[in-house]
Structure formats: C-alpha cells, structure tokens
Length: 121
Image (cartoon, rainbow, N blue to C red; front, side):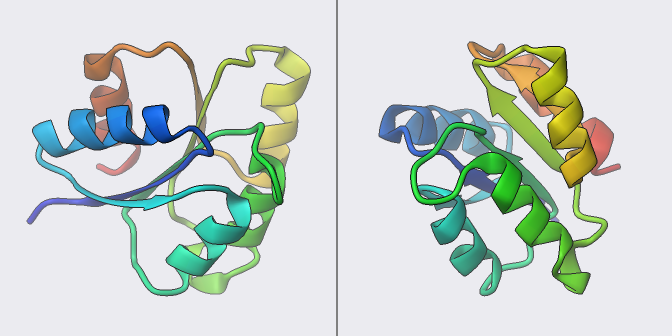
C-alpha cells in the first residue's frame, strides 16, 4: 500500500518537481498552494507525511504546521519542512510549531525520499 504525501508550496514549479519525484518513488501525492489551502486539503485527506514550505502567502509554513498540530487527527503526522532557509532560529521555530524535520532546497530526490521513508516507518 503506497503512502500518501501532502505537499504545500506556493511555487508551481516546486509542486510539479515534488509531484514527479514522489510519484516516481511510488507515493500518492496531494497538493496545496499555501497554508490556508493546505488545511483545506488536509480536512479531506489522510496523508502519511506532509511536506511544507515556510515562506508562502496567506498563511506561512509555521501557521500551517500549528494548524495541523491543532487537529487531533494529525498530531502525530510527520511534517517535513522543505525550504531555501537554513537559519537555525527558523528551524527551531518550525520544530516548536511541530515540524518533524527540515530539508534545504535545492534537494536531492533520493534524500527527500529517504527522509520520507525514515519519518513514516
């Protein structure tokens, strides 16, 4: 049974890249364009892992992560942040919001797939 991954990123190019990498690795993929849309999509799906950007319009990744963690159904769902940011303060803030891990863009497909398998095992 293949796992479902929710990707949340405002960049269409990044969403398409994630879709290609994740589908090639055998995952089902559900996508959202920002944090607000991500919470809407989440209410209608049961992802095994969530991947989110931090810098997005309407609702940033921190707000999205907090929103996910406030929903009892998704308190334990692994959340990986995929961002160009690598500032330790931002990583710490994401961890405090409830993020499971952090991957810096640009990413290697194998590293992303390995991270997903590690947090969803």
